[in-house]
Length: 249
Image (cartoon, rainbow, N blue to C red; front, side, top):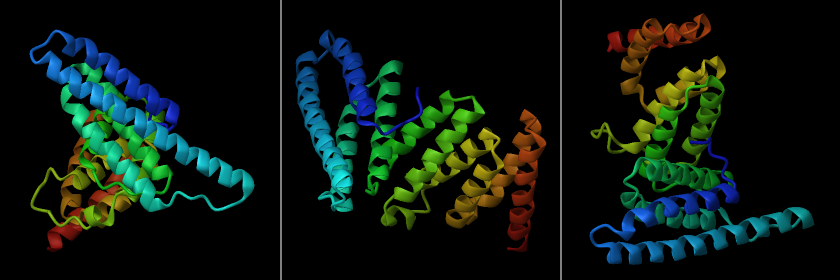
């Protein structure tokens, strides 16, 4: 899996790759006719989506070249992005094979980043979090993990205020919580201390109730995986701060 770029070329290629994987798998299976019809409808919808995204980018390019205001507002980007993620939710259950799941995840991540970089907000978070988690599990190089952590930070900033309010704290699997914890893990695996500091600051701001445990488990990983000294120092600093706060309560 590749690091998301949010380019229309990669989004277009991602759509094509998913459908190329799904079509042979559904041609001979049970209910092939019904599934094939669903795929045809989804394929047309995705094609129309890309047309809209192309018009948005063309409008922005023209506005940039002529120094005029572009017509597409943030709310429009949010609406287009929400439609894209809902289409993805309809497509994802059909992606049962490993290759199809990976292409589907890459598509969701690229769409989310496109929304983010065009000034929209993300209202449907779960498929994005699942996609980023799958990508993180495939990466091993610190430089790739550094890039992914930065992208996760961009996406965090674009998550809708309603989701960031985090009212359903009783649910440990809520996507916002998972995203923040995964970002902190990816940042740690990148071995970049500045990125760790940034991710930890966001984690402790939004998930103070999870912070002491996260840093305790982080220290255990420092020992088990022999992290560099500079990484250990950052983890130790936060571990001291948050275990002390936890003990005072």
